[in-house]
Length: 515
Image (tube, rainbow, N blue to C red; front, side):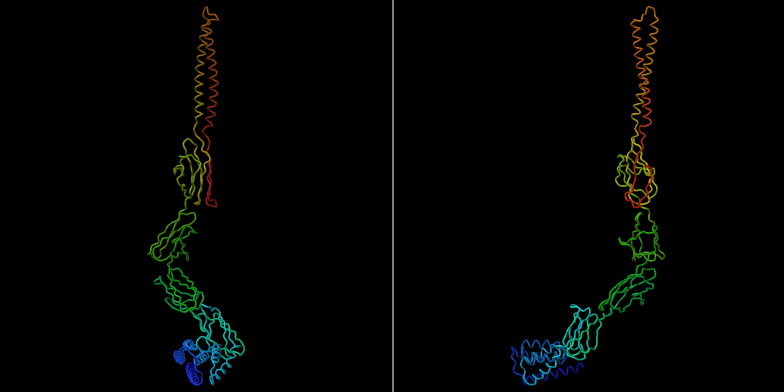
């Protein structure tokens, strides 16, 4: 077919050139010789089937000699051969406008008349998904004649009535080919969707040396890697499984036949037992995946972080070489609760379970291990504060000491001393009063002593004064004894008060105690 077209074009071109050379009027040209050279070059390209290159050379020749009849007719016949009916019609009309003569004019006129249906007959083809960046190329009958039109996504071209083979191609898609019939005076509307080419898939698996590897693609088993196969366009999921290793999953998209290369590294499973069910295991601050109650970790030595609310975070070293049956056992210790204290005097000591733990004010919170504890705050000459607390979480605690009464008995001792002094005074002045009373009695019976005797009167006055002082001292002694007794029973005997609470409330700690 292609060879027959080449012969037909070559014969047609030669005949056209010969007849035009005989019957045509001389063409005006800026550079006739160069235009003739372009004409010969184009004829040679047409003989070789290089239509697109020939058209480019013809256009170059027409720029040198715009009205050269041989070039105008050669362009028109080439476009007609390429099924560019609209272009051929316009080219033949341009040829006629250049005023050819004789048989060439009549032949061109017949062709124009035959091409007239192109004005009312067309094909309108839409290729779904085609864009200006990724258009579809449309061919008539054969690709050797060049592109008929470009769909981005639609192409609309005038066409001669008849039967044609429509070929649609787009990069990365399977070629579409079908036969259509074009009816005179009508537009054939077509919409086509091209199927993307399958993509070559290559899978390489590393790790898991010596173990059987199972590969599945979208749930369908494949041969053991390494392997290469073709996958349809779209989204896919690849799974690689091996005993003692984590199942690796990779999702990928295949499009436009582009190669897809997947590299899968098998990661060994590490059996683990942790005393806290909801403990979290981290590697480089990222959670470690789990599978079948085992950890999915990379090969080689790693450092894992194990943590859980209410427990002390633990760093665990995993060696690079792990013998068969290697297992990771982790026991997390309950985290302590930080305790802060306010309200107690500076210098007071804090005892936990009977042992001095800190001196106030605290430089940093006092850490209480989880469990039951007795907290006691002691200060010199003050009543101690004592409470019990049950810690079952690591939430912060705060102890507010409301009061620590003094244990001093100053006024008791003052009252006792005063009472003692009054007692001594009572005894001393009572004795003096009795002594003066005895001397008075002895003086009163002496001969010649009258009631107006000066000595007798002096002894009477002194005895009376001493008796008054003794009586007053007795009253003071009794009052002082009562006051001292009351002070002894009340002074320095007050109880300390305070309260311990959880700073973070939602179920963090349980607090109980005596305040």
